[in-house]
Amino acid sequence: MSQLPSALWLTVSPYLKKFDQRLLCHLSKRVSVARWEYMQSIDEPCCLDVVIDLLHEYLQGYYGHANQRVHLVGHGLSGIVGWLYTQRYPQHVRSLTLLSVGVNPSINWHAHYYALRQLLPCSREIVLAQMVRMLFGSRSCDITRALIHMLAQDLDSGLALHSLVDCQKIQAAKIQPPLFVCQGEHDAVVDPAERWQSLLLKPDDQVWTCPEGHHFFQFDRPRLVESKLLNYWQQVEQLETTSVIPALLKH
Image 1 (cartoon, rainbow, N blue to C red):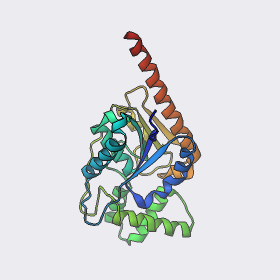
Image 2 (cartoon, helix red, strand yellow):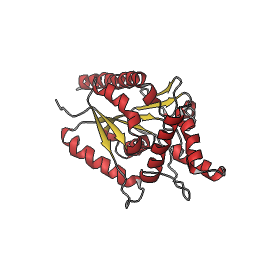
Image 3 (tube, helix red, strand yellow):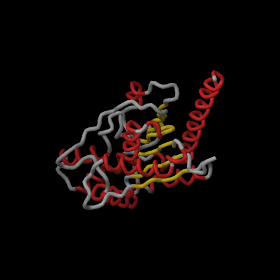
Image 4 (cartoon, rainbow, N blue to C red):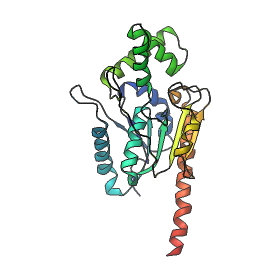
């Protein structure tokens, strides 16, 4: 049996990966989880095709020889990368879990930030403070300042779909592998969960809303999110088993 991790956590926003760490620590005690990271260099253009090609190269190199599919997981822009990868290479994905990704993938927190920058006649720091309240809820002054710094780093140095002069458009599309959509109850960035219904057509597709959660709900509720992820992966694997057995009996 292959010893490769059964799940792969995608990270294309390295300055924000701390918000995933609690959940990954809990998950790693129950299942084998790997993390794939992409760091945008200063001289590189912000091109999602490059990221998807690098992810495919990684999966082919580590999982291709074992003929093993993997559960992909990603938050925000990392989830969008996973979604686009799954559209292109469904044969390599066992399931896809999206955290804080709306049915319109172009609308992320970066898009909200640049919209506020154009609308509000105030400093960048004030706009980022507003984004902290939107993404995390009410926080202390010290924590707010730390979060402003992290968001600024992500805007300045991380992979991005948008800027002050341009906003990329991404078309929502259905995927073949099972899809699990997770979002916070009080997430002010992504679309309401009901808007996903047109893309959730398979019996193993699900949407879950985290009670009292904001955009980074996995940071505040890691135990609850861990439980939901593990249950979903188990359901997917059980459905695979029940579909394989009748096929074997026919032969």
